[in-house]
Image (cartoon, rainbow, N blue to C red; front, side, top):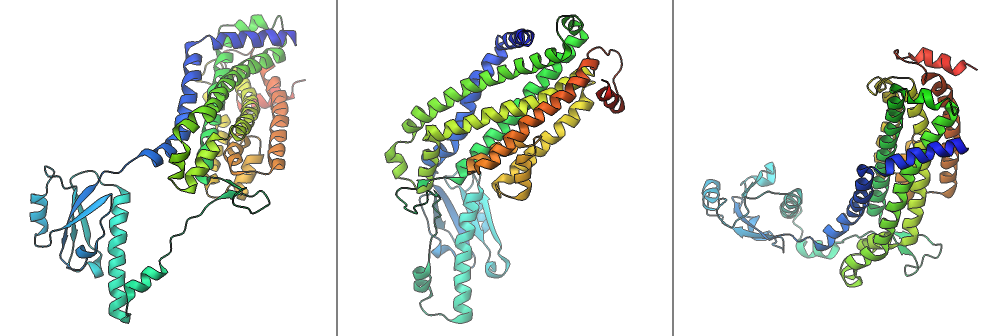
Length: 428
């Protein structure tokens, strides 16, 4: 262990002194906090500029019944042709767009929005929904001659708001905590992508370090003082300590933001002025205990995932003489990581779908997928099983990697085939 400790110390000190380590350590928390807070800040503080839209309605029935709002002001100009309206209300005017409604819109649905400023899907949907409602009402009156249709529609109009709470067994709205599936998905996606980046970044660092030291024959000298297994474990654990140091710094900064920054940006008055979904978002981000548990799981999965893949990267680096030659092995190692990303995207549809559950249990994909599931509230036994299998798999892959590593570091000038690698595993 003393020899492994010396190698860990060398690997750690060599990397934490680099400017790249310092820069990424400081910038990554800012990026993470920004990604978590940005959706909520946009919802709270973004305002929509009033858009004036000239309506040329050749059907004669739509324009008078279009409802203006704080976002859109409709101005009827039915006596103009489409060409005249576009010429009069061009980009030099204060008008945002010309809305042209064809005479046969009820049968063809022909509506054109000719804009002077960039449009948006939200604006298009707002206009389309109003026109659809007007046409549908007219068709009902024409076909079924329903008296007081407008009054009937107003009487039955219902707006549904889904308020999501965490079940505490009481059913009492006052005691249950409001949660937000949107922020859970954002957190899961953020942690999953972060895990992906760390595994790739530090895994490649292991491969590159082994290849460079092998090419310079440094390893040939080092193995005179320690065994290949001690050398491999020291290198893996040394780089792992660098990753955990960054995670610890990130955790302190993020928890500090949860404790002090979120309450400052989202005061009780601001939250009260918005819907209960915003209460769930702010409650989630401002819950230091909850964020601490997520960061703890993140650290466990980062450590387990990195150790698992780092042993494979170390074996791949020992078998080649250049980083370019290692690409054939790197592609195979990357395959389950890419599958993890695809499975992570499916979490938003159903965090408990069979493919997502299995992907969060299988060790090669579990670090990324399980971290995307945990914010949704996963059973403790699933997390425990996933972590147990992950760390047991690390022990097994380390044993396999060590058998390749002890031979590969002495092989020069020839890239081994997969069959040769298999033969190295059988050597006592």
